[in-house]
Amino acid sequence: MSIEGSLPILRMAFLFVLLSLALEAKPDPEFVKSGQAVYGRTCATCHKPTGEGLPPIFPPLVSSEWLTKDSSSLAIRIVIHGVEGPMRFEGKKFNNMCMPTSLSDEEVAQVVTFAAAAFNGGSEAVSGLQVKAVRDANKERKGPWTAYELDPALALEGSSKKVKDDSINEKIEQNPVLAGQLKRGRAVYMGSSCFGCHNINGEGLPSLYPPLAGSEWVAMGPKVIIPIILNGLEGPVVVNKQLYDATCWPRAEWSAAAIVAGRLRRLADRTSSKRPLDLTTQQEDIDDINRIEGEIADLVAYVGNSWGNKIGPVSVDEVKSIRDSISSRDKPWTADELKAKK
Image (cartoon, rainbow, N blue to C red; front, side):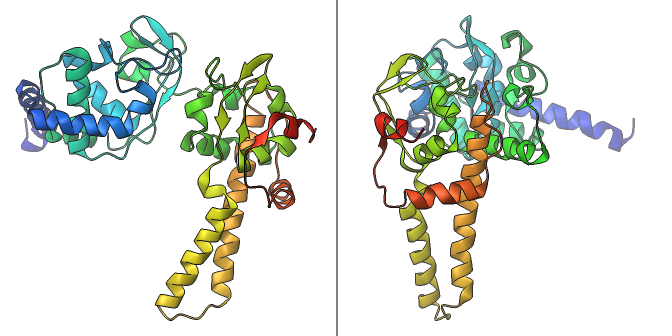
């Protein structure tokens, strides 16, 4: 065998040695403590500080087969790239998404080590080298894993090698405009706090966060959805005959205050650099507003045409018009106020 032909085998052997040495190492208490801090700011919102999760939306990590010694590289891949359900945790079905993180190799090692030790009695340390090896081996990966890809034994029926987005693939009469909005809107939905409360499948969390699937509020269309996105909605509110008393908060970067702050920041930058306040500054304001209103239109179209909802395309002009009409609003809406907009 030539040297070139043996290189892949040598790489695999080297990777195996790295993984073996990492698994045999014992975690330093300070390393575990650092992992706890990473967990607190990255994972605890969904999985809870106790690792018990929030069934049936967010799965538990306590006694989880996803955190055993044999699946430590599996946990690393989830932390780096995320994972999308359906999947099985302790015999129960979960169908949400764990989003990718921007953690460093060391931080990933710390949080996986902490989770395994705190919730599964693990005593092996995961090293930054081990994380780097896993990251490098999957450097072409662009999106979250499916449960089937990570471990078919832990997947449930409906999980596949390729992510299937039922919300986009529903049988609706798509035109090119709507098709584009669905794709972009899903990215906005998954990149904001929306999916954390309303779930990847729009089902929400019973008694806490209302569903978007088949919601009468979504069916009211942009004139109701857009004000909620811009200013939020304060409970109590009845959705699909069930009472919810949570508050939906607006996305901070889409608020009027954020636009003004961006404008002031650009003005300050130009003043400090002694550059003239020319038409470029005004164009930056316009570009910022156009971007925000485009994202809102795409998000409304995605929510409004997924999970059984069918409101059709949403134009940026609709967003601009509604935004202008409520520009003086500085607090969340109430259900009664929004009903008046029907």
